[in-house]
Image 1 (cartoon, helix red, strand yellow):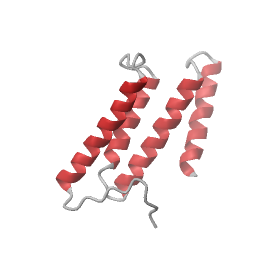
Image 2: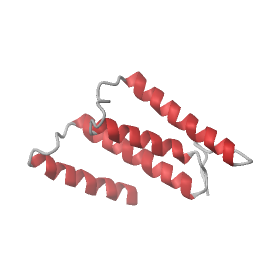
Image 3: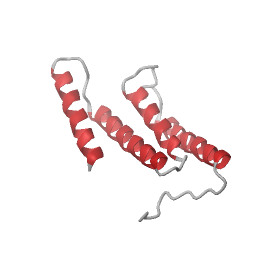
Image 4: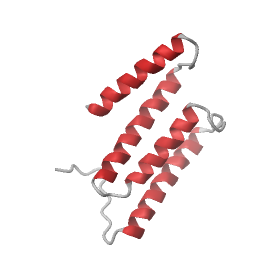
Length: 113
């Protein structure tokens, strides 16, 4: 719930900035910010639980943020390239997990209690 509240605060700030013409708010931009927030929160949650696979979520979140704000002219990337960036970032995270941990337990879809 805290992640959603942070998203709402960021969305409100971006809406105010768009009123004054500083940021161009489109539906695609809002969706990129939403997914960057979700992947970033997931990556931090994994890192806090000492699972280095979360680095993949943080890398993908950083990629989406760079693409959303058009920092290095990544806005012309296709959907296939975005999907490949997703796969690549999680492969990097899983590889780092395998390098530094003795046992690898990737729990993407299991309910943790």
